[in-house]
Every structure is written in C-alpha cells, then in structure tokens.
Image 1 (tube, rainbow, N blue to C red):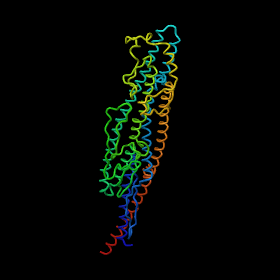
Image 2 (cartoon, rainbow, N blue to C red):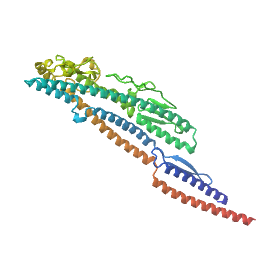
Image 3 (spheres, helix red, strand yellow):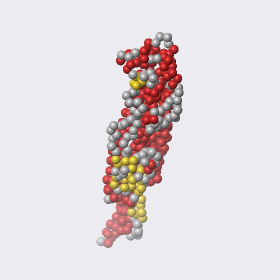
Image 4 (cartoon, rainbow, N blue to C red):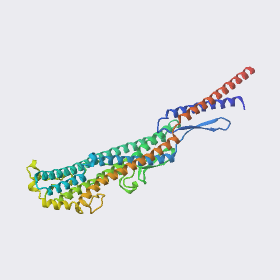
Length: 453
C-alpha cells in the first residue's frame, strides 16, 4: 500500500469518526424524547480501501404497529371510563341515597306509614314530600345526563378538529419527506411517527409504508384516512341535542363512524368512544329514567299525584313533578287529595310488573322487561354501576397493555444513554488512532520529499 493510499484511508476514517460522533450527539439529545428513533452509522467497505458511512434509522415497524393499536384501545377505554365515572356519579353521593331507586323505596314506606296512621296531616305531608324528592331526583338525573351528552358532543367536535389538523400535518410531512436529504430525512420520519401516535389516540388506524418513507393511513377496517391527501371528515355540533335521539354523525369520506367498516360500533380511540357514550350509554340511562317517570305517571294516574306536561315521550324524567294540588305551599291540600284506600292499592301496584309505554320502546333501556317499578329502578342503578366498573377494569387492562407496548417500542428504537456514552469513547479512540496514522503518514511523506530534494 502506498503512502498516498494510506493517507486517504486514514482521512476517510477520520471523516467517518466525525460523522459517527455527530450522530451519537444527536442520539444523546434525543434521550428524553419519546418520539426520537435511534440512529446508527453503518460503515460499508469501498473498493480500494476505506469505508463509506451510511446513516440508518433504527425503526421497528411491527412494534410501532402494536403501539398504535394499543394506543387506540387504551385511549378509547380511558375516555369511556371517564364519562361513565361522571354518569355513575350523578347519584353516587350519600351512598346513592338520592337515587330514584332509594327515593321510590322511601315513598313506598311513607305511603304505607300514612295508610296505617289514625291522624293524617303530618303523614300525608310526608308522602307528598317524598314524592317531590322522587320527582326532583328524576329531574336532576335527566338534566345531568343531558349535560354529559352536550359535553361529549363538544369533545367529539374537538376530536374531529384535532384529527383534521393531524392529517394536514401528514400532508406537509409527506412533501418534506419526498424531497428530504439524508441529513434531515430521519427527523421528518420521527415527526411522522409522532403524528401517527397522536392520531391513533383519537381513532384506530393501520398504516402502509410506501417509497421514501411516505405512508398511507387507514381506519382499522379499511376506510382511507390519508393517502397523499387527507380524507374529508364531516361533523357539525348537535344543536340542540334531543332527548331520546342520537347526535350528529361523524363521517369520513361519507362513511359514518358507526359503520362496521370501523370494526366494532364506532371503533377504538377517543372519538368513537365519545360517540358511544353520547348515543348509546347515555341514551340507555336516559331511557331508564324516562320509563321510571312514565311508570309513576301510570301507577299514580287515579290519584293524580304526579303530573307531566307531555307524557309517554322521551324526556319525561325532565318534566315530571308533583301536582300543585297536593302541595300546601302552592295552595294544595295533601290530606283531602290523598285517599288511603287508593294509596293501599298503589302500594301493591309498585310491586307488579310494569308496562312500558309503546312510544318509549324505540330506545333500549338495556334492562330486563316485565319488572316491577321498584325492581326496575334498582336494576337501573345496578346497571350504571356495573357498566362503570367494567369500564374501569377495561381501562386499567388496556392501559397496562399500552404501557408494555410503549416500553417495548422505546427499548427497541429509543436511546440508551449508557450505550451511547460507551460508543462515544470507542469512536474517540478510533479517531485518535486515525489521527496518529495521518500524522505518521504525513511525516513519512515529508521525509520522502526532503530526501528527493
């Protein structure tokens, strides 16, 4: 090997060491960045000696895919659990003492006490007070459910806006990636992965890698979200939200989010679970309260104790109240209006199978049919508690699975500080050896030139 060739090889080694050192510095700067993917410089031997340094990004497509899937499930489960916590919390204070089930049981006990009393006034007033408490409980629950539905509707709009913004970012990144040089391509790909991670928290996605790192993004069962350009996502806030009716649909390229193309109804991710909460779970609970209100109106029809402006339609629980003719402060008289013989019959009616109103059958209650009003009210309280507990367990499990997926991806593609510092020492030693070789060859060439002269 000639001196000139040896000098070129040593200089090439210095250049490669400098590049490796630069990449190590980049890696160390990304230690605490969860979206940074580790870079490695691979040396490829060249004909005639020396090596060519190639930058490689240590991505792991299989682990990223697993991360995206479990991110959708975890965020969807957490979103649903958060909503159900609030729904279950409507009557949770005082060990559910203010629930319709508890209020109805207290009304029944008060009615029985009144029937058994010789004197009437205090006991009659107590029956009316307990009836008012029950009506207030139904009114309160219905209003809280409606508020939660409105909040969910607003969050759906926010999710749609965020999805649109993320898809627009993918468009920008696609252009940058297509024209990127080796020096900044890895940075753009990191940003692309970050967008995909954020997107997966809103909706379940699958990705298809194309040339030069460009991706196409699909909803879990094939609906295109992004392919060179973002798909059209349509959503208008539901104003007003009507009792017993679903809110406006989210549509992706005309396909409603409730379509089977998104796997299970509405799919995973926060967006689909917000729709499920607003249009399924809340409507079921609302229907349960409406059916309790309707049962009261029908059972107490002969006495007229409960009244509602428009009976037999969704939203009854909002409007049911005690008729003013029973309320002393409103000029009524409980003693003259309450018949003990009628109340004795009504007490028995509370334990008989309840007939649901035909106009209320369009919305499922999620409960068994042919229950007494008392049992139906108890089942309603048990239902929302059971759904809430299940959602908490599902959220905990999904969160744990996502944490594992996140850890596996980080271990495979993230930066280990100790490894990088060890590699830095190795490169420094290599750089020092190459520098000495350059110096030695340079001195030999100087000596040779001096001898020639």
